[in-house]
Every structure is written in C-alpha cells, then in structure tokens.
Image (cartoon, one colour):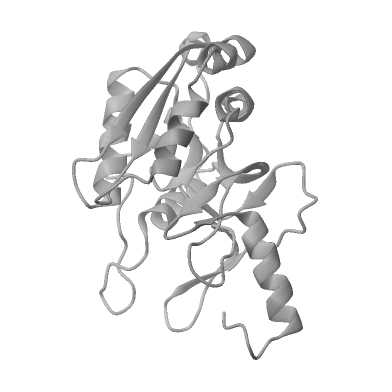
Length: 249
C-alpha cells in the first residue's frame, strides 16, 4: 500500500536550500576522465551560477571512499547530509563522467518536491542499456524483474521510471525520513544479497509516494576500460538488430 510522504510544513518551505554533492568511490583507482570531469563541473562560476539560478544557499562537496561497499558509503553520505541540514543529496559516482554544466542544469530539479531525478547513463557491459528500469513485476520464482527504459534519442522531458541508478541522482532529504539503512542489498529467493542497493532504495521510496524520473538530456559516461555512453547503446542496438546472431546481448 502506498503511503504519502509527510506534507511540507512552513518550516520546510522556509528552509534555505542546501545541496550535498557526494562523490561515491569504492574502486582501487579513479580514472583520469572521472577526475577531470569532477573538476570541470565545479570549475569557474558553475557552482555560483547553480546557486543563483535555483535559489540554493550552499552547495557542499564530499568524497565517500572509506570502504568497498556502496550501500555503506551511500548511507554515510545521507548522515553527512543530515548533519549539514541539507535539503537535497546529489550522488555522483566516481566511475562516471558528467556534463560540464551539470550543476546549473541538473539542480533545477530541486524545485520539485517528492521527486527523485537521475541522469542518463548505461551499463558497462552488454546489453549496454540505460540504468533506468520500468515495468516492475514479481514472477512466480519470487524474483523482481524489470525492463530497461526504451529511448529513441529524441526525448527532451523527464521520463517516469521505477528504478534509477544512483550514479548521477538528485534526492530530496525527505526521502530519508524513514529508519536506517536507506540503502542495502536485499536477498533474492535463494538468500543471496543480489538485489542491489539502488533497486531496494527505489522500491522503498516509491512505496512511500515518491516519484522517480530519468532526465534524458543529462548524458553521463560510464567508465571501464572504455568510456561508454548512450550513443554506445544506440549503436549496439542497431548492430544487434542488423546481425542478431553475431552480437550477443
């Protein structure tokens, strides 16, 4: 049963907007492309521009890199955001690249209550599909199943989704009104913790009445041995359609 989020009080509405940008890193190294991208999004007057455009009093940055478990790092970022009295938490993963104007453009979404918004990036491995899932369903085997959102490349407005990856995601702090942990790995029917922390979080907040959206105009790269972005998926999908026996999904 859906439970609506608590209504905004006058004190909520009057609170200065504060955003904590938490860079989450659980790998041995940071790729040069990611480091350069993270510098560039805060370069020059981009932080000041974002604050002026969207009525934000403060934008703070931190690294979360004190361990290998992403759920632990995300939960600590939430605690830090609470300590700062932040109104929003922006997760950026350290194996990603971002548009240079990410902050002025993406932080426009702070104006929408009860709305979680993620940027567009893809899986590092086949099928290289967007990390944004729809059509949630639970099959007879007890597993949760989703489809990757289908895009044409022409979308310019927010797309509703059931699950969004946390690699570039803006979350209002009201989403964390519930008890800890907010991010955790959920067991599958075999008792293995293979349901990732972003899936569990999105299912929990949607049950409380929050909506989740993909911003298809914010294109992010996902770094492995190569950087892969949405253009890679479009090309992979084209090749798979043309040569279905030669390109494995």
